[in-house]
Length: 285
Image (cartoon, rainbow, N blue to C red; front, side):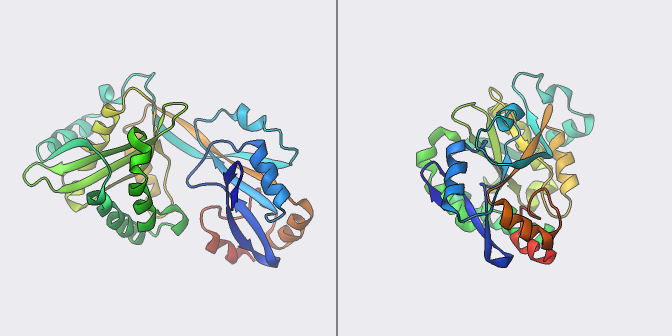
C-alpha cells in the first residue's frame, strides 16, 4: 500500500482482517505522518516494523503518533565500526590462515552491479532450498533484477564487491551492501558464493576485503539468518565484527477492538506471529 509519506506491505489475516508490515529486513523508525496515514486508511488493524539496529532506541520511543504499541529487542546484529580498532588487527590464527589460502586462489574487487552478477539469484535459490529459509527472508530473482535496474539511480550507494578466480576470472562470490545517505553507514544486503568459494575459504577473503574497501564507515553485517545453520552463519560473521547492537520490533495497535477479537484466537502475542513468514501464521489459528 503506497502512502504519501511511505509504503507498507499488507497481509490478509483470519476474520477478514488485514495487518501492515514494514520493509525487509529492517527500516528506519516510521514517521508519525506515515503511521497516521495507515491508521486513517482503516485498512490494517496492526502495523509491525523491524527497526534498524543503528537507530537510537530513544528515537523510537519518542514517536508521537497517539497509538499504543509494544517495542522490544528482536535480535543482535553485527557491525564493523569505523571508530573502533579494525577487526583484521586481531584475527585468530585460523582466520588468517584461511584468508592466506584464499589469496592464492581468488582476487577481490569492486564492480558495478550488472547482468553478470545476476548469478547471485541462482545462489540465493540454492541457499533457500538447502537451509529452508522462509520466503519472506529470501530475495527472489525479481528482487535482484529490480536491484540491477536501480543501480544507475543508486550510483555509489550500491556497493558490489566480487570474488573471482585468478586463473579464469570466474565469478565465485558477491558481497552487496547499500549505503545510508544520511548516516553514511553501509548495510549488507547479500553475501553469497558458490562451491569453489566455500572449498577454498573464499568467503573469508571476500568479507575481509569488503570491510577494507568500506573501512571509512560503519558496516552492518546482519544477524543470525532464518533457516538451518543460522547460528553457524552468525558465528562466521562475528569473526569480522567489532561491535553489535539489537534490532527492535515495533508493533502498533491501529484498531484495538478488532485486535482483541483476533487475539482471542491467536493468544496474546506482542506482535502477530511470525513476522517473517505469513504462511506460518495460519498454523496458529
